[in-house]
Image (cartoon, rainbow, N blue to C red):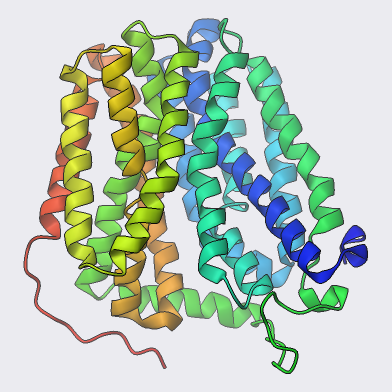
Length: 423
């Protein structure tokens, strides 16, 4: 039981849980975005290659996604609060240990493996677990708020980290992430009860006579996750969504989120100013994602995804050839920010249509794994291309072509197949 939560009124408990979860997701996403800030300082201080630094970032991004389905099982076995505390503690410890790194493999171990495992335990699946456990009403609003923290929060967090590394120093940035992660551990312990029943209340919006929802058994949850994956993998729509979400990750946090600051540095733009562009994207992401949800309720989600991926791909192809000045980059940031995670609502809508409400969230979790694989490929691949060719131009053009191909995939007529059974 969370000690201080016992003394809050029921609405206050729910607000405290959401606030602490929001901050945890923000720090987790911020940690995963930090390698983009550290790339140039580490290159300057240690002389490491851009490819080796990018490999650590790619590994962390990959584990951030792969851990998700298993973190959900840990939440059933050990509890949400313990999983949150463990993930945050591992994030803090791994970044703290990196202060003594001197070889590239130290960076891969601390920021790639350990921080990837920790941040993956405090990711999108945590938001879904908190919403289901604490809210019977306003679930969509709460899930949207917590989802925004994983995308918008990370981008807004970047200017602070870039300011800390503005003179080529990398340790102040690492220390900031380490302290932020550590400070949240006691907050989770004090303010996040495991269940509403533990503090004598019910889910927000739940009637007093409604039966308490039992916790699922851990073995059943693990079995359902893999069984649903096996059934979903036999349908073309799963691979369409998995493949296009691969492109989504490749073109967002993998490429732009990890390498835009370094690309701007190549073009003579200061890191703080470049991080400000990502912050601007994060601000407009709030509006773009909200509008995408509104449009998804009214229009064909496949057509929306075709538009989103097509515009995203064309903008990436055009970016290297535009004037690298404040006006053109600001226009790109606003446009790209509106499209940053606009793909999520229509993708989730298609998952619900084809897999049913029972299995759609599980399969959406596996589709998110495709997103992180794409992000990892771009994080490493763009660094490798920059090292081999001396420019990011081929990486951005290639990613743009993938966006155009993803758009075309939704325009190809597909034979209708029966929906997966939900019983």
